Length: 346
Picture 1: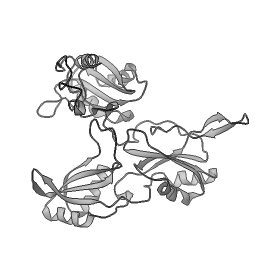
Picture 2: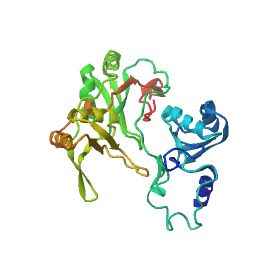
Picture 3: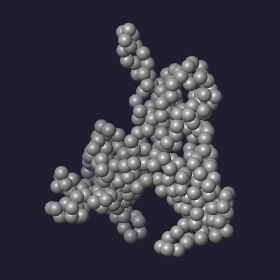
Picture 4: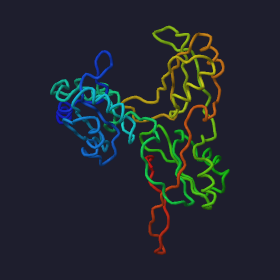
């Protein structure tokens, strides 16, 4: 198994993030992560050929998760492809760690001596090796790509972009304002920063009201108490840096910046949602923020520490659509609607 994987890496370059000291790519080999099941080389070629000639293309799969590599004719074409395709179709598109055939040779005994090692040698920014297999670092889902046609109107709704760990009660509190909720189920794929839900109303009229009123709004509710303090680093404190935790894993950079801007200039921030090889995603995460000065950082810490924040201040809006009703045979031989599958990509 190790030899086969090493050969594959050596052939096409591994992971994502290959670049010189300046951070600019030094080759034209591009890594594509988060491919849909069943994606083919033709699918990749169709997207990448707009950026220039393709020298080689490969789709691989590990533990049911697909990724790919496309070698373009020039570094400039690769840079343009990364800029144009990253995030499209939910893909992670970045410069591969290595050019084709340039991956380092590993000893016959395996990587890092015994076993695989933690994080699989930090193999690329986009992927890591965990107990269950090869896993992409989860990304917040965006709705700027093409989507399926919405199913016909019914009494059943599909709701995206809910925070992880959300309870039936909290979701029902928001949706029950539109009418009687007959059935509700929270959905969480194994490797995602967000939850989704299926909400079935007692009447189609209530579902229509919820579809038109709640789509594009943020779920009501609030976070656990926020923990905020000055960042500690190498035994000292960075007085103008704020460390916060207990924010939702689906916190957006834009919302966090808007929140922190109330206390002064935000020079830099990073939401630490997950890392390569991390297979259990926590409902909450931490963030680091560099403020314009010590006084601004202190004001933020004083106001935010131990405070519950409304979801609307940190996460994006819900997407509410009609759910697909797949028919199944009922005991009396007729057809009855069933809940759709639990995949978020709907």
